[in-house]
Image (cartoon, rainbow, N blue to C red; front, top):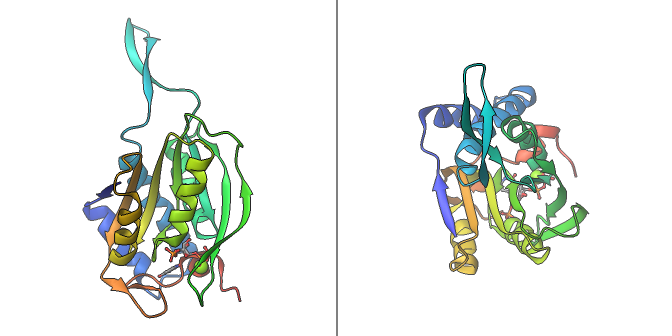
Amino acid sequence: MRVSHVDHPLVAHKLSVLRDESTNSPVFRQLTEELVTLLAYEATRNVRVHEVEVTTPVATTTGTGLDKPTPLVVPILRAGLGMLEGMTRLVPTAEVGFLGMARNEQTLEAVTYAERLPDDLTGRQVFVLDPMLATGGTLREAINFLFARGAEDVTCICLLAAPEGLAALEEKLRDNDRVTIVLASIDEKLDENGYIVPGLGDAGDRLYGVVD
Ligand SMILES: O=P(O)(O)OC[C@H]1O[C@H](OP(=O)(O)OP(=O)(O)O)[C@H](O)[C@@H]1O
Ligand SMILES: O=c1cc[nH]c(=O)[nH]1
Ligand SMILES: [Mg+2]
């Protein structure tokens, strides 16, 4: 497993505004999309491409095309949905599949409540979107699910990670060089309720409102 921490002043600035408890939902959504576009630039560094011939008004030259099948983007509902537009802005030809997962806030176990993905992911490059990597349970389940369907490699784009969750994923996936985690910040710790500290609170609630 490879971890790529995107160290860029614009990412740090946007993230600081996102964390602020006084940032309202419309601004939070806008910043989430802007951040994802910046992270996606790094996350797609190894997207598979091939040479194409391009005829410009002046000459014929060699260019770059995206391989088929195109990348599959998988936002993890709810909070990952707030990252979808930022990702597809950068890779408009990507296909999109959905995983609905919620953490039981007592046991911190991830439960999958919805799935809409191709049955066969053989050879696909998959980009998972989820802003928060807390205990790592949600991403672990999602990654296992995608490899079980045949995914070639899985790149997860997150905004924040807790060191405990990253370490837990590392332990499970240490020898798996087909997994990459791209993130904007590794925060200080998890609190006793499994929340990232200093974090930004509940990403899904801040994007879409509080649910029971
Ligand atoms: O690393 P973990 O400990 O598994 O926690 C991270 C998960 O928790 C949040 O989802 P949540 O369950 O709050 O669902 P929501 O997106 O619908 O709010 C977050 O968006 C991640 O999916
Ligand atoms: O800090 C956290 C942890 C899990 N999920 C969130 O939305 N925030
Ligand atoms: Mg939530």
